[in-house]
Image (tube, rainbow, N blue to C red; front, side):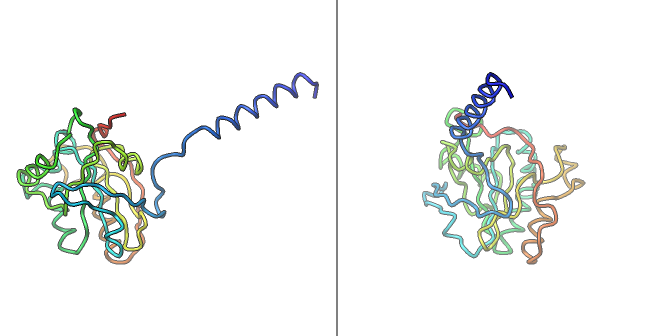
Length: 210
C-alpha cells in the first residue's frame, strides 16, 4: 500500500470516529428494555411519574384529537375504539396514560383545561392526560405518530410498541383490523410473552416543537 493511499484511509477513519463521537444517541427504547422514567403534569393538576406505578401494567398512548386518523378511534363517544380499549384496561387494573406532545401553536396542543374538556367530550377513560409540550418524553420514547402505543409490564419493561392495529382504515372498518395492541395487552395480562411486540405505528406525525 503506497503512502498516499495509507494517508487517505487514515483520514477517512479519523473522520468516521469523530462523527461517531459527536452523533447523538438514537432516541427511543428497545422492546424488552426498561421504560425510561419521566415526570409530567396531568390535566388534573397532579404530577405523574412512571416510577409511581411500579408493579403495575402501564399503557402510554400518544394522542392528538385533531388528527383525523387518531380521532377515528374516538368516534362514537364511549363506543369508540380507543374508549373501549381504555375501559377494558381500566377494568383490569391497567394504568392508562394519554400523552400529548404537540407543541404550543401546533395541531393538537391543549392546556390542562382543554385536555379535561376533551376527556368529557369524548367520554374517554385514561387515568390522566399528560402534557408534554416541549416533547422531551415523546422524543425519549421516539413516539412518531398519533396514535402510537406502548405497553410497560409490571417489571417496568417495554413489552409492546407500535400501532393500535394493522393500519389506517375508516372508523366503521376498525373492528375488521388486526388488533395488535389489544392482543399484546391480553397476553401481558395473562402473564404470557407478547407474540408480536413491535409493529409499525401509523397516524399523523407527532407535532413536536422541533
